[in-house]
Image (cartoon, rainbow, N blue to C red; front, side, top):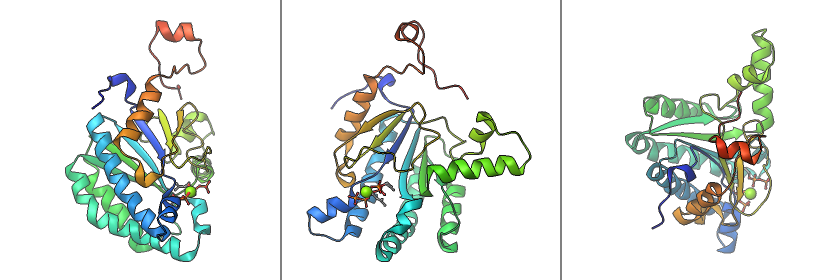
Amino acid sequence: MQTFTEFSVPAHVAIVMDGNGRWAKRRFMPRLTGHAQGVKALRRCVKACLERGVAVLTVFAFSSENWQRPEDEVSGLMGLLTSALGREVAQLGREGVQLHFVGERRGLSERICAGLDAAERETAHNSRLVLNICFNYGGRWDIAQAAARVAARGEPITEASLNAAMGLAHVADPDLLIRTGGEMRISNFLLWQLAYSELFFSPVLWPDFDEAALDEAFAAYGARERRFGKTSAQIQSAPPAQLPV
Ligand code: IPE
Ligand code: IPE
Ligand code: MG
């Protein structure tokens, strides 16, 4: 087993969990089977992040644009969310995971919203790993809702005021973004928060994404030099810092 220095383990990892449909198609199975396997891959990934000392994991589970998929796939994904909540929340709580659901609640059923609220309440006291599940989330929606909230309070729109009203205001920006499934795009994920994240694109389809694939991404991250606009010489004389807000 590979071991990692603390430096190569990012504090905040964000993941676009892509490739469930293709994973299923290759096996002549329904797309929903791929999504069900995707839930298992997320469970495995949470465990791996806990073991490696990651502080925050943010995953893209359902985008604002995913409503455009066939009705049976959308309702299947809602069903998977409900069943995963029922099955996993208590155990995640015991493992020290603090859950947050980030995204627009409008459009989700009352039953789902109640489940999301309960899961957040039940795990709020935990601090080992913050798990943000972006569901019915879009980066543009996030920026627009933050601007609307700041404007409604009559406050000036600044980087700091917007940042404090965004869906991920409770955590620092992602250090590393991983997208599985081989596509090299952001697909309206964290447009604001990814300003200085390191990007890693993996060809592995999300249901196959395992500890080794995660470690590969962390190793690539560990080899990067994060400069935040400074020169390499400046970074070598002082440790890297977060982008100041
Ligand atoms: C990602 O997998 C999961 C969701 C978008 C809900 P996809 O369903 O997009 O898988 P591919 O891209 O079709 O393989
Ligand atoms: C992004 O994947 C959304 C999630 C992983 C939830 P998509 O499969 O929807 O992205 P596009 O449409 O191929 O860009
Ligand atoms: Mg996809």
